[in-house]
Image 1 (tube, rainbow, N blue to C red):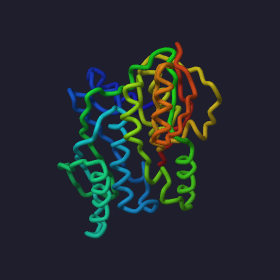
Image 2: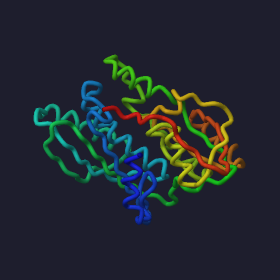
Image 3: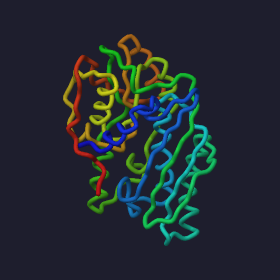
Length: 274
């Protein structure tokens, strides 16, 4: 049983649930948990890197909804052994990303805990939100960049090995300007947080569609989570404009499938560790 889906269904009467964020008027609200021993281990990353990634993974949700982040609320469960130096370093990660994206941190909550758990809520503004729903039969399906490296780096970290500081697992690379410019040409989008195949299943359920793949995609690529590349769909006539914008921002496009009648089921195992 998919416990996440089952739990979310308990709130199925809310029309705002089911996307990367909740759209209410011109505002978009998104929240993400970033918990020790579920999403990261402290020995893998500096506290500054942890604060930065906690912000970035949430900002990613706002971007793929064509929303500009404005405010952040932070909830941090702090281990009792953290020093003032530790707290200052953790805060510096939040503040660095907030400054980069012109976000104001306006509040939240702090509690004591045996491990470091973080929840970030981002409040964004949009004129025309991009949703998961909106895919049409015949749409081309595309993802940006290259997939698979985050899974490989996670496997290295689990074995006690080191990864590069610029690893996407440590520091997701977001392409906000690119997405905001292609938004008028696309029909649906979501970020690849749980893996390409997981996100395709979500897209399938949201739009009651299947996919015709143009080439085989290996599980090492399709099951790699924590990538934070963009998965999106668009009608064939928009292909030229999207390619032009991708070239402008030096973004690699992978047009790999077409939306068809049917359904799609992901066969990957959950990528979060115990």
